[in-house]
Length: 530
Image (cartoon, rainbow, N blue to C red; front, side):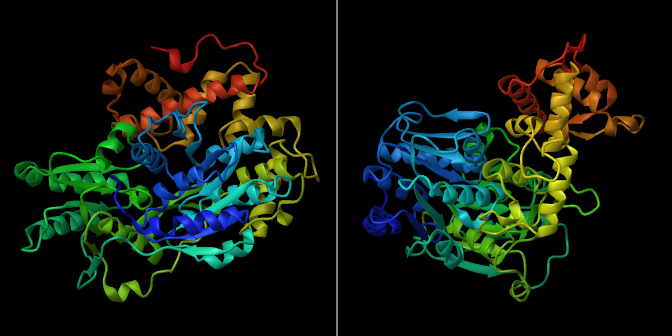
């Protein structure tokens, strides 16, 4: 029998409101059940007509977990009526009526299928995260409604300021009750002095040693994989002794490793996670959250013009989301590793990603979509004028735009078809033309991901920036060869290497699918050298 959730009482009103209009904004705090209960209710009510429902999630792990839970509650096989699609993993079929997808999947589909044929309703979950693809998706979808009056849009979030998006979509707002169980918020008495991973590990120890420890699982939020592994190393000596499992959870992990952290286990567990666990995920058994208050966000470097990860303080909205993870299945507590006084200096919401990152790729997509000046496009929140201008100049330099016009060149169309930043896509097209598609695909994959070489020998300084050598190491790793890595004294991050290899294979396939003209192949590609 399904657990009764706060959103259940609102489902009839949600269905009725959307039946009488095209759009709806739903505000529901963590634990309400919006992600798993609203989509099937809309499907059963026939609100997508004969079409499919697409629900957008900001992260792959959330897309997979949400689809699995919906399928389980409906008693159907995942991949039939209910499925998911994320990068490198498609569990949908011809029978799928409800597909949970990541946002980039939709924006890329819209470029090749601008009418979104066969889709009757699109749900944007966790809209408050305001990723680049979320902002593109909502703008494209509203524009599409001008020619498809049957298309419906639902925006859902726990912490969004709803007035602005409701005005944008010209629709009403419905609000659900709060989380199912209370969460007690605790703060440290003085600012943290030591490194965050060590402070977090100590906080875990203090929490477990308390007289009121409830024996539930613990979710610890840390800013990155490095801090997660440092905290794990600090915890392991004693958690192994007492039979507590410590599990990491971050984006570079394999799907299997991510699922292990989410799924119920036989022992008490401590999950060490980045903000990947902040939204849409229910980790059954978690009753305590320890929050570092930090996150790594993409931000464009003024010096290089490229995006880089920057360590920063989270917003109050994120803090509330994180605390909410402790109250999903029973009453819990959230320990914040900052003082109550420090909280007064935290921003209410995070800045939208589109206002702080490189916008060359989205500007190319907008021009392809509208054929007009991006400054006049119907953004929900437009990028800065100088960012749009800088993007346009670069796109002209790459040969993607006709000079002085808002029209894509044939080369620009090719760049749009490749799943890479326009800078890298231009490199891929040229590499294919000159017979170096394999080499350039490997290099593009390597520079688009975090470096999988995490340490090098002191006597190999040039190895820190040798792309060809990395391409060869990537091939070695795929073939199970380790001799070259051992001889060079390299330490390889297996998760990053695996993901880089997946991107390399995807780029090679995309060059063929896009029918990019290919010149005579070089005698031997770097990924084939032994």
